[in-house]
Image (cartoon, rainbow, N blue to C red):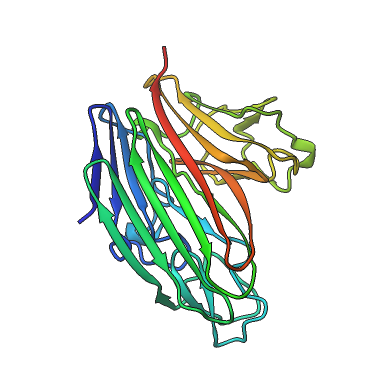
Length: 294
């Protein structure tokens, strides 16, 4: 059964580590599948064309090492490599593909919970000289919630990776379109974007914002929004029809920011860069606040 955090304004639904989604991509610790604010949903789902929705991302799913999991390059084909927050994945080719369904040996998970927060610890075994303990706490706030992370390197090698939250957003079940406005607290750098996929040209890139000329029928994607500059880790999405907004603020400078979306979902992604020597611990947080637009 999912764990529910709830107050008068907001409801947060969280699947436990070995419930529902069991894929090899997203972190199993604190799978926030749905959030409502004033009884209106602010979350969506990665895909609507799959018969079994538990195989795809929902709500606020996060991921470590989307480009390169721990030790992948030096792992022999047939051996196992770490995916933080999931467990060990079996390497089956020379190229890592985050969309591939890898065979998984789950890590060890421990959960404690009450009405206002849930704490989940993911402990890996030592393999190929890599090891870690990930502790995540999701705590309810008046109009939002905070995700606090603690990553301890228990291995012999340095952990060099990144972490981001995919943020599958859809306000009050309204398709992405003219009523949506996504803002950032820095100037966008379209000349330095790593990739621009906007086939219908329905996504409009402003000075520090994105707007829409209509509902995209095809996927859109923009990477490296800040042009490789470290910037304030924040975005704010507003829906002028429902008069609801939601923002995320990270406790870290974002080294990279991407935006992905489709007809039914928009996903701003703040990347946190992690460089953690053996024996050391890193802490960071992501705070989500929903609000009414006046």
